[in-house]
Length: 277
Image (tube, rainbow, N blue to C red):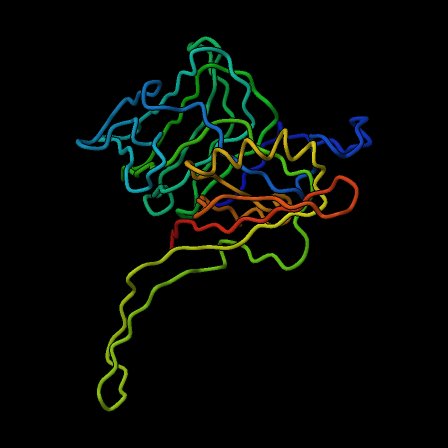
């Protein structure tokens, strides 16, 4: 489904915010990376759980584990324990589209009065990122409505990393860059007899230049450390290409290099991601 930009999302330009362009907020032409989450196995509950598919399975990083309600409508609620600032929600490894199930997302400061953030019916099972202006809340509630219970494999709620620079030309969007392992069966006479797919997914490379060294150390390096263990959501250009969102992981360490121009750095990362086709 891609990026959903809520009405509360207002991104100022550096001139409007009085900044120099080196610190957030940055325009939606810059990538958003969601790797932080307030959700964990001990702070979520569901109104309904099918056998073997508990609520906490939506908080793991494993896409083959998921929460599935036994009946609909059903709610999944996260209690952060205290008011926490967040500005994105990521959802992946779900079947909302194929199950034709709607999702309503609400938040609360007292677990009594709830404010709706968004409600939508996804058209497919692709990764979703909701971007919104910073909200301080303790409770978050997801309500599923439909006739077929979907699965919910990954739910992140947190603050997104806003990249200091945009990605320039030459980028291959992850949703269009497929990685498929294919086995072809050919007869002795050279006839095509069968084909089987043994593995499929998506993968690409993200690269940024002209990053201020101080910005890299303060904002990007914490993500580098987290990416050693944790998959993440990424929308490379939310304003123009909202459909191109990935839930990805790296296969090695991310390392920057100095560009030799003032204090500027560049960095790239190769990632793999799940396929929802």
